[in-house]
Length: 343
Image (cartoon, rainbow, N blue to C red; front, top):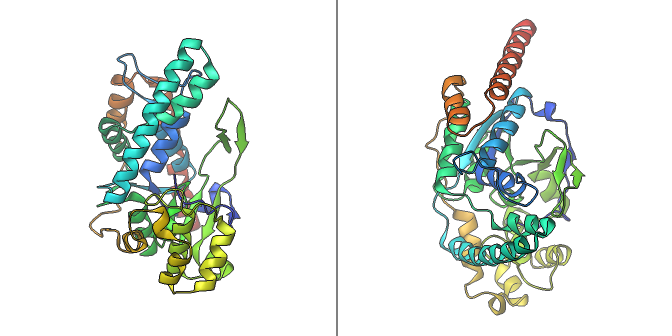
């Protein structure tokens, strides 16, 4: 879901080439949910192989990852660990909504209403353990490091960027900013298009970089106030935020109260909206577990095992997989030769 910072945040449009040779730490779950939400048939069903196994996540992951690698980006994928208790409660609520969407999907299916089927099918998206493990396997076979977060993937990715282990977090959500990510890269899509919620129409999008320091200066707040601002707007731990207070008014309140968060959350009547204290969310965000026990090491691509996974197990086109991997290797060789020439 993510924090609704869009109306407050300033960003800079870039070209993917601007990220060449830079380490982009990707929030894996954020990326995978994009794929299983959008890569579907016209009736909303996920793509499947001949055995009935879902392949939407692998189709998106292989296509986008290799395309970004061809552009020279150095990727690292961070996968979620154990969710905090507050998020677990929210996940239970979301599951209830997904069950309702599944019911609506079946009703639309009876009417053969393709548009409604697609609408409700996309709201039922779930990442299974097998999909997660297959995604980790494919990423590793592409020679890309996989990092296991102890808790939230976006918090771990933010920690890595904050510690200068990466240039930016790659995610569509703004949440990594409240975890201290110094830079956030959004819209890392090769096509430059994003499907709208309904139908088969597209929005044109361009890659962008969001700089944390620039935005804090622009907003006139510090990192702790940014967390408080997010809490008023709504986070994954207190979805919906404080009803009736939009992002701009929330910013005014945060600046007015400065660091006196007790008076801030008392004024906005936090306890009338949530069954837990504001401090529980605030310190969860501030102190969410991260780790330094990981290795960022890029390996050679394992063609044989990628073909085994995608072609043999999941019916991908062997020619397409081979062509993609050969093109990727050619691009890599050309970049290395160019670098040596410049040296």
